[in-house]
Amino acid sequence: MKHVAVMSFTAAIGLMAMFAVDFVDMIFISMLGDAALAAAVGYAGAILFFTTSFGIGFAIAGGALVARALGEDQDLLARERTVHTMVLGFILAVIFAFTIWINLAFLVELVGATGHTRDLAVGYLQIIIPTLPVLVVGIIGGAALRAHGNARSSMLSTIFSGTVNAALDPIFIFALGMGLNGAAFASVFARFTMAGYALWVLHRKHQGLTRPNLRGVLRDLSPIMVLAFPAILTQLATPIGQAFVTRSMAQFGESAVSGMAVVGRLTPLAFAVVFALSGAVGPIIGQNFGAKNFDRVRKTFWDSILFVGICVAVVAIALFALRGPIADLFGVTGDGRALVYAFSGPLALVFFFNGLLFVGNASFNNLGHPYYSTWLNWGRHTVGTIPFVYIGAAWFGPVGVLAGPYVGGVVFGSLSIWLGLRVISQAAHDDAKMPSPEVNQARQMHLFHSRK
Image 1 (cartoon, rainbow, N blue to C red):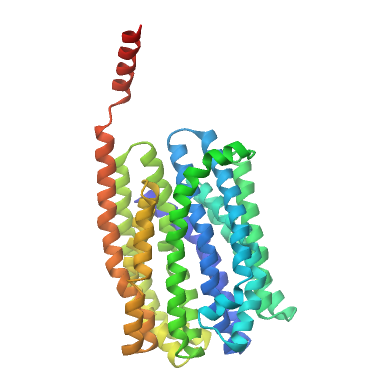
Image 2: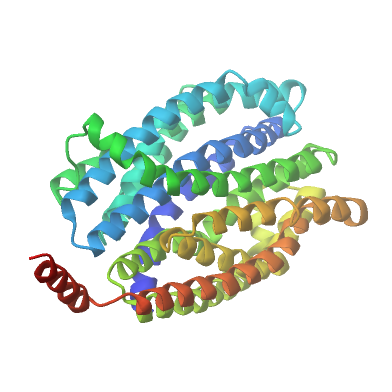
């Protein structure tokens, strides 16, 4: 439990720094007094979530492979897979970012933006999207640092990134009069900061980088993509589900979309520890899986569930007590205020089941079953979201739209824990059936003498 808590809290501090900047961005933009700007950030957030998920998928693959190699005492392989994951991630991110960039107007309209709000969102995204390859390298670097057990430096990479963003925000937005585009340029500088610091620490402290070579990249292409492809599919399910929610909320007007944007910025900040848990617990499970220590894999799994429950309970109580000041901070009224109130308490408690899904996904990705994460996440954000959002919108309006995904989360979060326990038991059973190294050595000696 101590290992889970330390890794999660240090990772969460870094995430909170990053999410806090998004939170402050929203406050600064709200101070401009234009509801269309806040709504544009909400629409743009759905697209950014989609692109960031691409990088998270590669980070999951890289972190799992590096942790497993370190657990097997293969330091050179760990260095090579760190670099080769970055190379492949960067190249594919360039292609992905270009595809998104030339289709921004269509994608923003797809999530429900129209008119002036659509133009604002497109302009904001045109500045940020080209730096996706840099963000991917930074995210993979942070995952590699956690695989080395250096959660502190992974945390600092996001803290320094957030500090740069927070310092530049008021300069670009207000002093230079750039408005929404100023927030975008501040994010660009922050992404370069995160990637640069992660690479520097990996090289200086862990000697965790090596010179990439074409043969090595081709050799590692298969193991990386075997994990990265389903992990990317898993991550893409969330923004696609969120895009449907955003489009459903758009029918209730800009006030509702603004309120949802506030909740969208508040959720990762409030639950940063829970979000960090999946990235923090993965290396613990991966290293012990590599070392064949299944008792500790199982203990990590159960301690993570307990940890999620404690964190969610504490955060839900705090949000309920502060729901009024939070709504006042952003000046939301009407439907927007109702959404903030609905989230700050009842829906926050149900976030526990999202946390269960995070624990399950981390286990599947590090125990050789990444497609379990894919199917569960897609189920959670399709059949676990669309019908509930549709019914919620018809019966309860904007609050029903916001609550819909949480209902589906109860089902799929519970299912992920059941399946996770089965995967751990099966892995331990399969390992127990394998002959020990001594038996293998005796068999090889017998074969040698027989041939002789």
